[in-house]
Length: 246
Image (cartoon, rainbow, N blue to C red):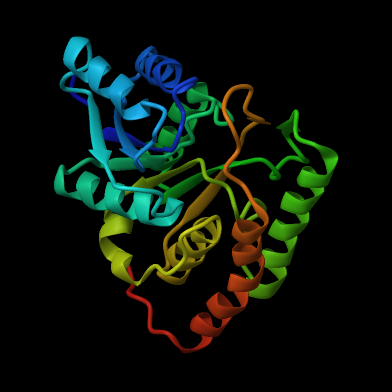
């Protein structure tokens, strides 16, 4: 099935979720293709994907296998470059664990394809705090981290660490992807900051974020620390770095 859109899903030990999330995306009325970036999952995640590619989804499901855990940011950069080469018009970021609802993909798509935005963000905080089944401590940590990023960088975005995103291809072609420095969740902040600095239009689309039911969260204190302290470097770059313009 032809599609102008590719959903990039990074994975590490997601055998409990991977087949279900693939089938959920492919079950949508609108056609989306999927690219899995697997960082050497020892639980056989990649083998499940290969089986689905061979049996049912040969021309819609794709896989890049990497050796070891190389970081969320580098996984997405690899996916972006692949998607640009394949000439997809709309390129998505999405988690494998159903914290991002596949039913929201068309809403993110429409914000770019029909409303004219260059980047759309599935936002947990644009209309209050829309998070389900997270411990209160983590909700507060995430919410106030986004507020901190807003204050330091001047980004007019409520959910700066959101990982549910749609880009027009031209945005990723314009960004200097090899200069993206962060590997963890600060990658999400850096991408939004850079998109804004390049002069592109961003829309936040309200979504409900649901904590994973299966598998293990990849969040840890070092990843969160990178997100908190890395924004100072971004602010410095905003003053002195020359960003490409759209």
